[in-house]
Length: 152
Ligand code: HEC
Image (cartoon, rainbow, N blue to C red; front, side, top):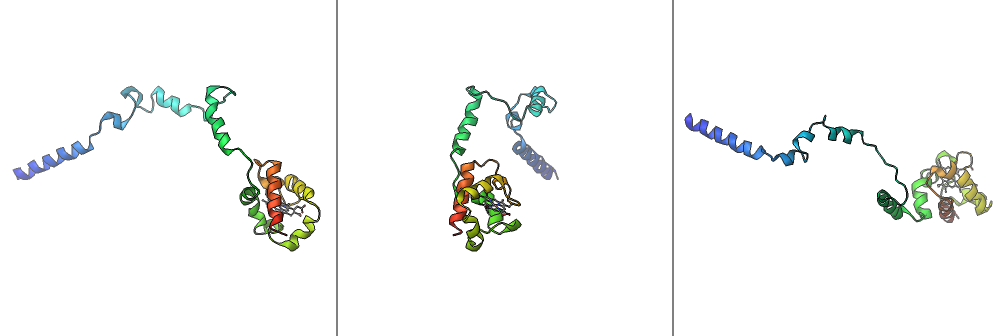
């Protein structure tokens, strides 16, 4: 009985040691700043989601660098896959299907300028820019060319 108790006590000690963590591991903040009611936690909760940054200021460099990576026009195929295929691959909403030469011939006959104009401004169930609000006119033009090329 005594041996059993000793073993149990030893086991509890061992478990306690494993579970013991240094306070740094529990929270990186000093004791007074750990509470959810501390000024630190409150400031973190109510901090603004974004911040305005004037061009030329130090804070703007990260955002500018990110933009650089995303800059450069998307290819016609990229725009098509992201914004046009939803309707034009399946013929949804009555869209002329990509690759359907019969459906495209009379449209192509209008001339590319008209097709591009309709793609940018919209035409009946065809939404302006295929709803790609971040697409430039040139990117839409590239997507039209891509679609037309596949539908001749
Ligand atoms: C919500 C569905 C939908 C999306 C998304 C969509 N289209 Fe269309 N598109 C249509 C429909 C419907 C028509 C046929 C409109 C008509 O002739 O009444 C059409 C027609 C067109 C035409 C032929 C216009 C003409 O003058 O005959 C072009 C070019 C075109 N779309 C390009 C695009 C491009 C480029 C995108 C992507 C940036 C795109 N579409 C995205 C539905 C869509």
